Length: 151
Image 1 (cartoon, one colour):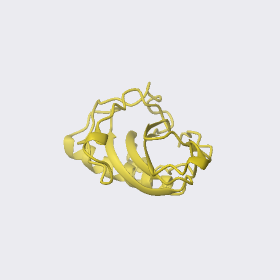
Image 2 (tube, one colour):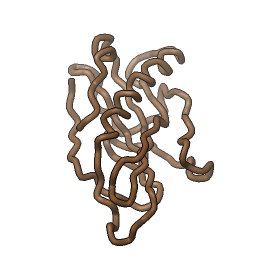
Image 3 (tube, rainbow, N blue to C red):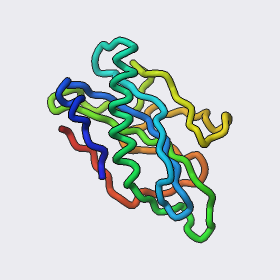
Image 4 (cartoon, rainbow, N blue to C red):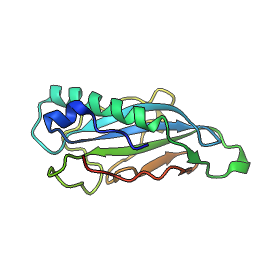
């Protein structure tokens, strides 16, 4: 259930990273997915390119993440919804190596997560590696193993 590399990005030889917000319920089901920010740190790009390719990669990530399932942190506690910030990387074979984690280099504009308060929008994703997550609330564990693959 790993998000697929978008065909359009593969044809253009574009690599990039996206941060996605994932809201899960107490049973670990994904309720909602929203893009947070896209980054194309692997080549010189114009701001319009970051926006365009960011939307391409964010769409692919959202589609794949919707099928994920998580083990809740404490299934007996009946915890409320939890939000995770997940980093998803897209790399071309022979392209740049995976980075040391999320970087603010060549990023697009950060987007507001619709279901979170303004206070909860404040987090630091620096160094967040591919498929790692930051929990805003309790810490669930993903059920489905997700391993990075190179196209």
